[in-house]
Image (cartoon, rainbow, N blue to C red; front, side, top):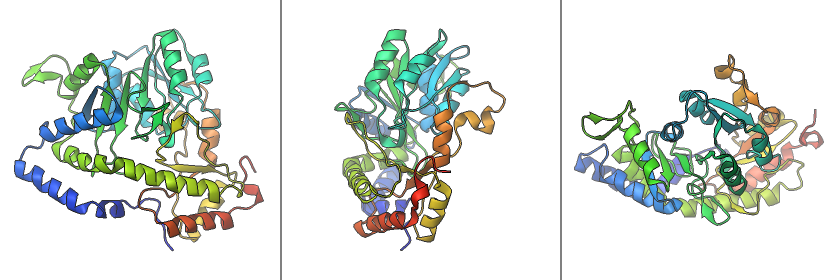
Length: 373
């Protein structure tokens, strides 16, 4: 049995008729930029996230950059970021001229550690940017309190957490503003690039709309040096269809994760731990092994596709080779050597889940425990 790490075609096949009808609706309307599909999606997505406003943008990286710009964060400022995350979180900070300060994760959830963040705050810190890594919300209660104490902006990187919740509130409504990516492999993915910002601050929403549309609120009147970062009509229309299915898809992911937790409990692999205040959406199911590469090779031989999220800590990326990086990245580097993502998604069938579990059970050996040589 061959189980690819990700198979979007099966998910799309289940809603192909809806997607086809939507494509033809947009084509027949012949409006492709900033039309009624974007307006409708923004309204529906903000309501879904329990936020007052959503602004569609070109991608998740732009969403982060636009938030930082909207809050006036730039040269001379510092932003606290996780040591283990996709590099986009760091790049957004660098793109506005600010300095990323690395904070190691909580060793249980792999999300940014609030205690480490508190130690990293300096007189130059202007924002904290926790990532809801792998689909589990970060400890937003602690981060909101930290931001309040030091008058910081609290920005959610929610690119992996569409529909997740912390203490009963959805991601996208937990900080001052949140950035989402609709990269095709996300829980809510477009058929191309796309992103959004959610916030309950109308002034921030207005600033982001202006910056993202060439610095303009009305045609040919440019109030500032903006950029072109807009969610197009077709992607918005397709996302509206997918949004209606998102809760069902997330529930299926939860079922897959529960099966993995039960089936892999005695393997010696380090399995994900969940903060009881959260309801994750399991964008990824990540295990740890001291013999990660050997485990991945054995799973590949068994027909199970895997990936590594993420093998290189941003602080060690060539992109930052010439930059002095403040903060801690020790555990982030360790995770890069030990983590392995198993297949997960709404398309997985029960027999495929059982095959992944059996393959893992057969692949592990006593030296696969975390930290083994």
